[in-house]
Amino acid sequence: MPTRAPGTQAFTRVGAGRDGAFGNNGSTPMYAVIRTGGKQYRVAKDDVIRVEKLEAEAGASITIDQVLLVGGNGDARVGKPLVDGASVTAQVVDQARTRKLIVFKKKRRKNYRRTHGHRQHQTVLKITGIRAGA
Image (cartoon, rainbow, N blue to C red; front, top):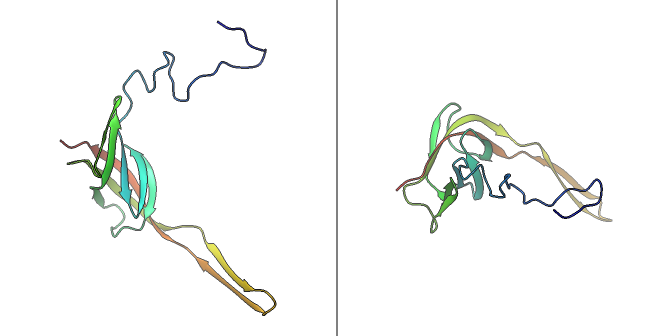
């Protein structure tokens, strides 16, 4: 083993285990990349995420069919553009709004100043299951 200066650590890959392999001995939990509201999210079971507003009541269960990638256990299935038969189920926890953003307009030397606020609507989801499909 090479010698190091006192107080320094050996370089290890991020996410690498004791044997240098990524994951937990090849058994990583299942995850998926979904698309909703024009954005992409990496989710796993029991994750809580905030997405653009979806039309659903709090407590309702929804299914997201736009799954771009399903991975876990050392392998990944990438869709072209979607993975066939894959879906993610989630429960709506809450309908919320983001913090207020201040929109300030000004034109110098014209005594023109306008201040407006904006709060985007969001849906809070808890991922309850990932189905990999065929």
